[in-house]
Picture 1: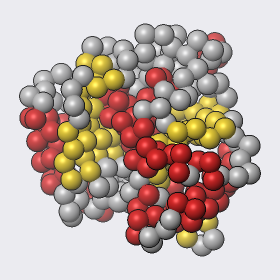
Picture 2: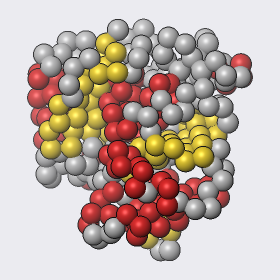
Picture 3: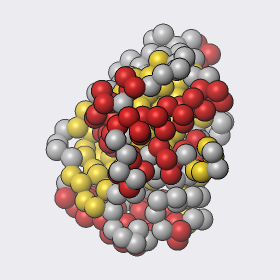
Length: 288
Ligand code: BGC
């Protein structure tokens, strides 16, 4: 079963058809720069272009770099404010020519990593963080997602964490790896002190160069590992959310075998919305 995943980012919009059993791409991904200003109609036009590029007619899942509740986008830190309060799922469904699923980008990346990547089979508290234009977060407890966490906007020393520790901040302030790693370290220490994860998965574009900054981190009790799917996790998670046979927009453990090491409680846990539980799978409870 294949689905098209589209990842709307603050800088680029990427798409690829994904094999839902393996999380791998079945064709090369296509990337188009996010239009500026990133107003809804302009972004929707690019979504349409991406769908056309693949002549796609199957299921489609789309990520958004902000809070998404019941298809309505609630924040838009790195896109135009016109997204706030918009029925974005309706707009993007119209652009795609069919119903789409819509979810937060870091949540999507996290679900893909928990299913196929660095978090596979990991019980307890797992924190996924993406460093890109912004900082995205996804929190899992025994494989079940707590959706729409916004830990990228923690205030640290009077500033939004994103302003110091995102990949964009590194470029904008011309920080070297050591300087940036210091900010990332400070940020992850705050996360550690607030949610005590046993595993932190680092994703986003910069995870491709994780060897340049992960070894510089100190004082972490959590294991800190790069995302196995690097920056492709968002696209994979987007596609997973569109699984047509699923009552849930995304299932952590949606591969052929769910996380076998997760306890029964985790696998049968019901979502925060209470209606998305799937027998045998943890439901991440995305409030789409
Ligand atoms: C947004 C998050 C998003 C992250 C990464 C932040 O600015 O508030 O919702 O996940 O950027 O795109």
